[in-house]
Length: 280
Figure 1 (cartoon, one colour):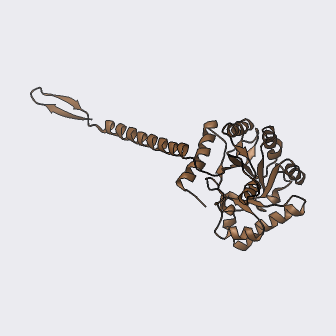
Figure 2 (cartoon, rainbow, N blue to C red):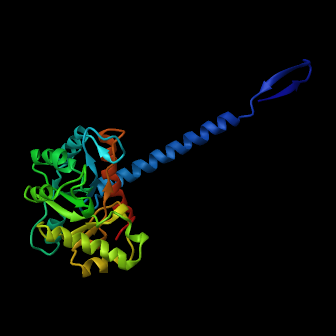
Figure 3 (cartoon, rainbow, N blue to C red):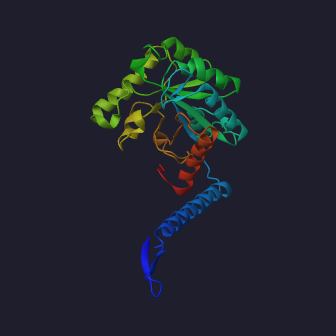
């Protein structure tokens, strides 16, 4: 504020410079714009829902580890219940590919649950929650971690395949494929698939790119090595027009805002589809 002299009175009175009022009006106006924009986008997704299958990305499901990759069992169960309440039915990636070729029909609202790395809790904690609800999932295994403490064993993987879980590759060593020469990247995907099949697992058709990172040459590389599909870290929905080696996926980390955060992440996938972001 500034002071001005008042003629005839020999004193001062305060005069507000309006800066505080301007800042308030600016941020209030910005808030209204964001609110209207968010409401408009929500309305767009609600009244013109995009077509496509969401793929959700998990890692650990348990009550004992404490990091951003861990979803507590109660939270995971609540999220699966939310999917059922919204009318979703789970399918595998192979189900999606068979439907693409006209060999089966997808449910009206299909969704794919995936888990990366191959942690032991995928069997002990995640699978019972899924089975209680008649749901299925895909687990992407890092081959050279099989049998290490905290990870799935060969017998675990065979058991899971027998319990309606699709097993895919997360490469041999979980190294970003984009960080190495193409020949080394091909070794990572080739050896992972062959090792799992040689040890008695059903044919490995799918792959998850470590850290979601990929390069333009990788779809052809995977096709050469008899993979049928791969998932990225790019959010969105998947239709039959989506490149099967660049399937889009939404990460589901440890929630901090309860079920509303999960709903927002589902909304994010739809919004990316509407806006054409990360579209393959």
